Image (cartoon, rainbow, N blue to C red):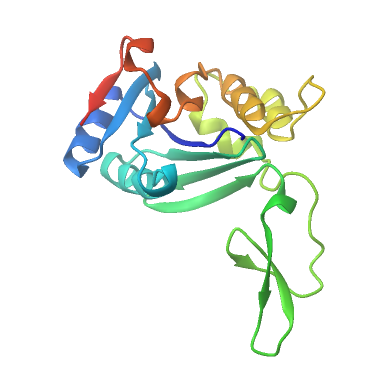
Amino acid sequence: MGSTYETLLVAAHLDATVDALRDAGVTAIVVPLAEDRVAVLPEEGDRDTAPVRSIGADLSVRLGRPTLAMYVFDSDLVRCYVIRDGETVHTYISDAEMLVEMFEDDDGQFHPMIDNVVYPVDFQIPEGPVGDDPAAFAPFAAGPPDLNAIGAALRGEIDAPHVMAEVQHWAIIEALGLPPQALTTAYRHCEPADFPAAVVLE
């Protein structure tokens, strides 16, 4: 069985993030990563999933700062959503083929659907990543962003024989100049003592 988790990166001060989460009634472990860079590990609900996109949207409005909702699914797929003012403004998918579903329209024609977006019947399904624009991730970097490193990580250009999704996710976070441990840990597997500066919201 592969690794599956959801975490959230917030480009805001720790205290402000904790206050906003507390006001919203979110149960989570909150870990400071760098100046104005905070990891949020929300408690999972049904099927061990956490609503990081909705939490990220709410925080982006409460804090007036961008958030990055991140999903790793079964060691196969990384999805990231850049959120500003409550809206998703950029979507990254590490391998679009992993998300292709078929949608039948009213005329009985089947359209490829990727991440709930329906495309034309003759749409050429992309191979590899979608949304691998390092500039979209730059606002979350600690210090001046290394766009070359971020772009390489988003494209999966990692020196490994088989790049599992959690390995690529780790590389993306490192390319942002941040420590990856908290952002690659599910709430259900997190031991707060491993992160001495963590704030636990219950």
